[in-house]
Image 1 (cartoon, helix red, strand yellow):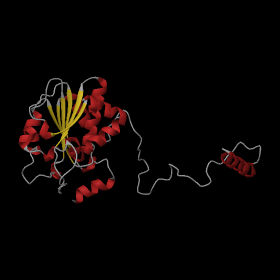
Image 2 (spheres, one colour):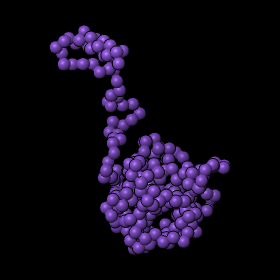
Image 3 (cartoon, one colour):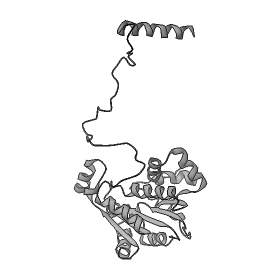
Image 4 (cartoon, one colour):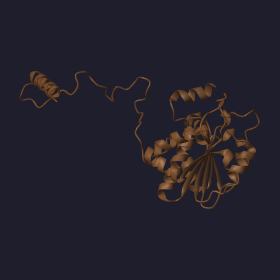
Length: 256
């Protein structure tokens, strides 16, 4: 305690020497600190990273998707990467849960590796599937606090499951999001879509141009073509102009 008191006294003496005994100004840091105005050159001046409780559309396609989710029980959201399809779907799912419109959220995506094999993964079933379902966790963590998310998942209110475990289920009073649907076969999508129960909504997202299946196996385009004309089905298409990630993403999509 004596050493601490001595150090504090020495600091006070330095402050008095710098600013004078009558000054109310004290220097908190000896070196200049980071400023939020020091924005890197590659960032846009109007880039906002703050969290929004209520989401809002960034372009016309996103607004169409939000309106379609409110109007129809089944919505297909297909198109370019980085357009916010999954994020909007999960944000609307959390919104529906908070408002009491549904009792649970079910998120599902195929456990398909993106071009390389991960090999044997240690741990129980949940730990083995975690790398494949990580994108859904990321989107949920952006809309819910970590503590609340863990509590809702422990109670079964939010369920993240691979497509393989969806057969035979009837999803009543639920908000269902099928992500990365371009990696589903026609038979898998047929099975998933017929899980829809009473007072439930389903959003299917995917990019037909980024399928990790062998050519001709993805059933997303065929399913959308057959169902988009039904009265209670909406199909929203996104293009490179709707990309909301880094501007370079839109240019890469065009080039690749």
